[in-house]
Image (tube, rainbow, N blue to C red):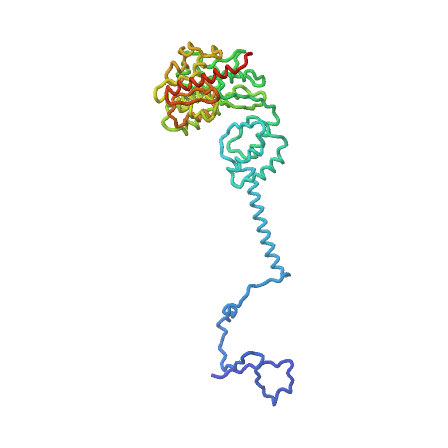
Length: 432
């Protein structure tokens, strides 16, 4: 095997011919190298093996650095900025869409707006139910779209409305004159009918027939509500009982557009009362003496008439529940008054207590045949969630509220105390 010809380094540019002798090539070792290596006799053939990247072995490689004036540096940074801005814009657009077009889950329903309420007061309901709903965006939308204050009234919102749809409905209130209809808790359906008859802006379709007041039966049939009454009510020979819709209309303050019919008002009030009764009945306490929601409505009307003190309602409810459980008569004065009808002049006499009417619970067992007033949702709730009490009696204190007792002896003493307070007050009243 012949030896390969050694590589002869080229002449350096600064070498002159005087450095060479007799045409022989003088081997030189570059003294600038740290360690001069002798010439290897044989050179290994490396044509088939790729060169090794020394930087990968040494671990001394460094990330590539761009100079400030490198165009690719600015392009990469530009793309990153655009990506971030794009994500922010997309998130903002989703918030706008969810705020204006996200839907809350609720059925089509009538909504009452009270005097003094604002559009901003409607936002929490949407904010609670719609993800990414922004109150700030909604307020900006309201400012840009609504140029009149929110008008009191009753509005029908569509099923699963968006805030944009709700605002469109509510904005119509500014274009119509509204009529206030106030129904106080404890008033009767007869009071309600007369209130609507006396309101000249309410169109009469149901309550007046040929200029005369309509009967209970014709009102129930015109409203298509006869089916909600027990047979004992629809077939009763007592004119007060027959087809009496007492209790079925929710007392409250309402606002309607001028020209609204009495049929529309009564239908709305019935639907509200039915919803309140159904909800309370479905969540009622166990072991109650009421066989149907209607019986609970009857009891709620009695509780409504017996007390106007909110915290007393569950206690009054407990007294009547306990009496019914023990087969005791309820003996409540408001039932005497209702059974007397138009004969009541403000006083209850002994003969009135002894008179047996369809409603007098001093003379009949159990509940009266119909409610005796328009009960509030609070009284319905108290009926179906009585207090944990063994009381069987209560009487007014004369100073507001009632005294609740467990025995007849205690009750009789409470009655004496009440009469004493009333005599003292009477003695202090100056003569007129």
